[in-house]
Image (cartoon, rainbow, N blue to C red):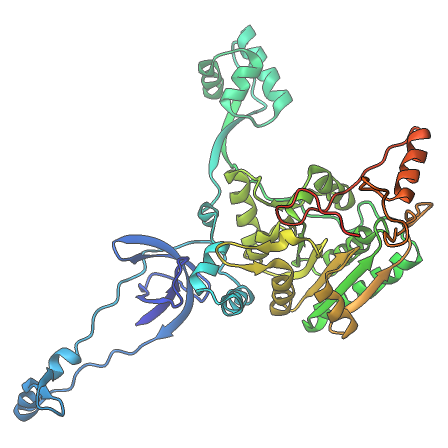
Length: 468
């Protein structure tokens, strides 16, 4: 008898044992449905065991008598009978096995690590990887209609409008054809009977287009080219040996860090046809402009994962990632728990940003877990920032991370001049909050028709704190 140990996405630390029916093909990582209490729940097969069932040997009358005698403890009290203590309960059986590709061993190791690292039950961590359950099933389908080469025997004006609309729209739903042609759906049905239109079912969730590594390459300056070369060589070594490699991409604002890791993405896509890439961004940075930039660079729209997606979009993205078809994924911190099949590059842009910290449920820092996930996958992780976090700087100085520096802006762009005002030397005048040098600078900007922007750093609940 085969036994499947199933972990459920609930706050429990251990999996439950179930019998595997002979007709089911189950491996570690399979997505299944199994009874838990009075309900059916989706879970992951964490382990598959083989158990041999031994038939009890024929017993003599003395042995039978012995097994019926109750056992007593040290104080002579009856504790149990062998018959009751040796009785085995039959395991419940699995109900269903999903057709989705099994969760990868690296993903399961990552879930176990996260549970230990955050002192959280494994089931609670698994829940973050199983949010859109609809993605486990095959894509829903819809019925569409398209032109054939057959002409209808009688061409009325309404039929002509429908055929013209079908020619312009291509495969389209009946409602869309009816709206575009201002005709009834009954006429569409009639055209299907004549053979002029053909009805077929298509998947609603279409696959993502494959990215092209060098669809729109960018010319790099010397610093960018050197950093990109280092990353490209590390990618080739990782693909060959599966070696983990962490990098800190430390570049001033506007130095072109994005173009550097674009080159790393292009090199990986070009080298490994199955490799997947995850780009983590702060939630506020996940704008359409970012996706447009990726689309222009690689000739295909990347998969998105953030809180602003509809259920349909999340279902499609999760399914394509789980089946290894989504090559580039851009998302917020929760994208770290998508079930990638072959994740070989993780980029954490603006790695210093505090929005990577999750403060409820499973409490974690996505930057730290991104490093560990890359290690579990045997891939690269690139932490990019103009102002790296102190933890990242310490790791770079200790040579645990390879430190890539970009100190110049490409082209004619220059960093602004920065001046510090020592309030002990130039204190504000009586009754003023601003120093004389700041007031003079703002007056100059005003006289030149320019603008000034002041930031006030609040502390706690104090509306205003002046520190000299």
